[in-house]
Image 1 (cartoon, rainbow, N blue to C red):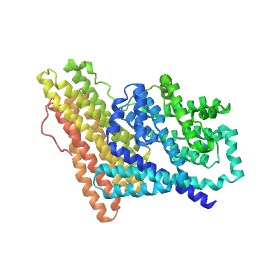
Image 2: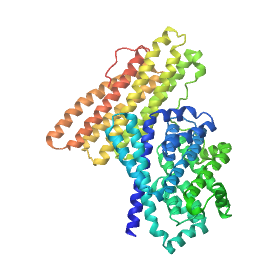
Image 3: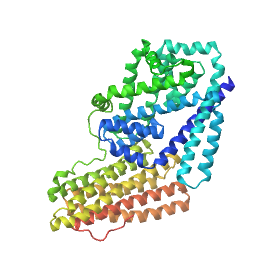
Image 4: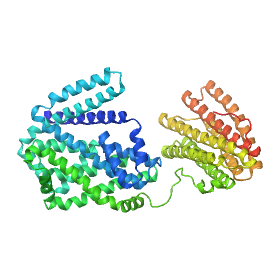
Length: 556
């Protein structure tokens, strides 16, 4: 039993490590082209299916492709419908691994280790000793493939003693008599190892060893399809709503697929169909039978549900929180049709800039509250908000560039560069929100405490800065002169507070009333507050100059 466990665990580890090395080598060899193809070619559903399948065939990991797709949806490079199509294609593309494993098992009689060991040696030498990037990556792929085959060999050896046990045979025979139990077992194993390809390989090794037949393998395979959704669901944590919808669509797609396959399993038709597709004695073709069952499920599932992608989309939308639009950095006022009327387009850009500053204010407020309350629950929202502000900066700037290509009045021409600089200053404010969030995390992780005097100073500075942000917003909304002058007076006050607080902090350090680590965090927070005020000052000086950009105040 000990030898069996050691061989199985070690073989599975080698298999997964080899698959990762091979996948990474293929992905690095392709460079950014895979992402580019996935982002640009998934314009229609069937193209999305094809691209998803092709990319997965290349990188040998449907989980990696699915996670990549969710990332594209989160970055708004893919729509939900195209993402669902690409995920369907990824499911088809991953079946090539099962055929690769079946081929490896087919030559096991010729001692696969005799081939895998030279592959590992040659692959390592090419990867470690050759300067050519192409050869190094090819060596990594060969190394990964050799490790994969070696791990497969060890897993097969681990199952050989089990094949002689009648109790083991009877235990697995129950899976054939109770398909739902088989599905649960397959789901649990895949959720544990985080790779449906590895799970299918285990089942193929069991089949080659004679422990399970096709009747037992099919329910296990269906369970693996359910379990593989765990990776996508985990990848969707912390993403926007559309990315979560893509992960849910993946889960629904596989779940509905298992539901249509179950009657065929219970009636005994599924194994007979596979026997007809892959003729030959089950013992000698067991791994190929499982690969065929795997491919048949994926292809038929895609053919059945691709025409129903609209239903999947609507179901995912409902399950991910309804049709409400979250504030995810998409512009609200940058209407392309207004570009023919520059004055109206500039007004839309101004409104979007106000909204951008509101998002930055929200980020700074959440980060500061997380710092004062030592509460990390809002930190993820801060990071996501900073990404949204970055995205909005790019979109507003591109829109302003489009406006500048039109026929602008002199006043509009003067406003244009100021608006661009204002957008950049707001983005820097959001960057400092991220800095403050990192300080909050450092305080929480290190359990830093501050004296009542230090806490009072930080709160006083934050109240002044918060009021300055509100004044800046009021100035952008239209009451420019009065609000901007108030904001600039607050900036003077913040500079005075910074100087005063640095002196008082030095005094506390001298008296031993302050921890050194806490003191460093105190100084960094004060510096971030002061830098945010500098960027707000730039905006308010522009407002007072009737949007004529003058000498910038402090930039950082």
